[in-house]
Image (cartoon, rainbow, N blue to C red; front, side):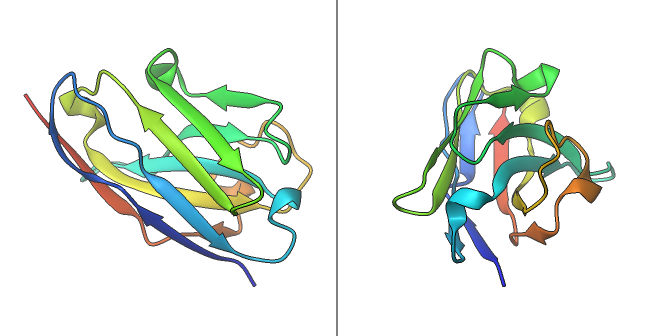
Length: 125
């Protein structure tokens, strides 16, 4: 069983930064591919970033490239998403996800079997 709990969302102004974090309660956290997705009101959940078991490889959605950085700490069972230069269009609920599959890159919602409850990120203009 995998439990994921996000924290670190909030309300910021455009141009500012946030760093949501996800804490995982699971054995062998280092065997899971981790990712962040987001869902804005009225829109489908979309991929943001993913990171391999060891953290050696990452992949980003185009809107996140150059502004967001995904990282993990396998000693603490955490995965973070550092978000810089935030824009109003980044406003969404951000979800942490885990996959025990070997698929890489795993960019689809259906690639992930475990999800957190989400953390709200709101960017004002």
